[in-house]
Length: 223
Image (tube, rainbow, N blue to C red):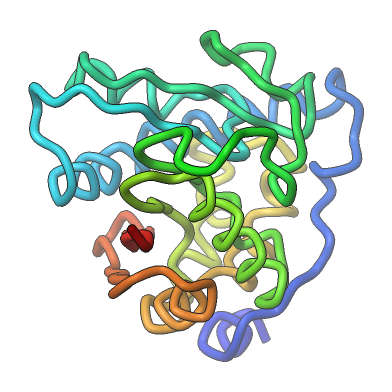
């Protein structure tokens, strides 16, 4: 059943992590940071290589930022990057570097073209296709240059990875439960490109990152 779910279309199911108090989900949030270190850094580096140079100065709004761990790493490579972290949950934002903004991603509290890039990581898969189109459209409104996203790649190996490796990495039970659910809701590149096109992004391009089991998206915004 899990294999078929990973091979078929997107399936959205509730995840335990979304509704728990911070003290009950702290270890699972730490697991997500560990997974980002293992699988998220290379896709982010490759994505940024497509749109900026190492010495560039640019601004980024990180949507659904949580701890902001990926951009801590990215700023080592791009010291001119100025990043604002936005999340709906203030408890998720606590570890993120300043500036931090607690707000709804469907109603971003900034004027049009406030940031060069609006970015999200492991965020879009939580939503239905219609909601993703709305989110990407709102992200495009605030972006002056483009919208960037990294998310999960829907694949059977990714589906089974967390449950099978729990004995090795000591994943929290919440992570073990939610991991396959996240992969069921993940994307193939063509699906993400189609959603970005519906949101009005210009020539959106999505591609996968091999054994990282991530998919990246870049779409320019209208001038």
